[in-house]
Image 1 (spheres, rainbow, N blue to C red):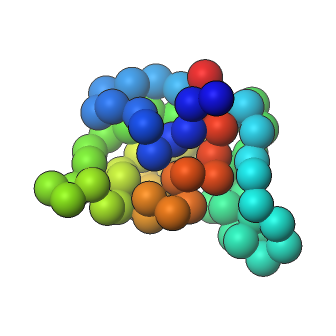
Image 2 (cartoon, one colour):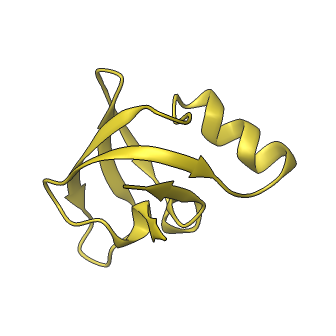
Length: 73
């Protein structure tokens, strides 16, 4: 299982599954990260947090803790 947190800059990935429950999972889905959506990792902050991605045509910064809940391929 590979998570978004393990992704490298420039990688193009597809969301396979969202882990987590309740409000946290809902917040991730509200940002446009749903099963089957494709994304690209744009930048990693110097200390690795946050991760900047492009999803559904817009830029999104996501924390490492949230990225850990997003399974990708």
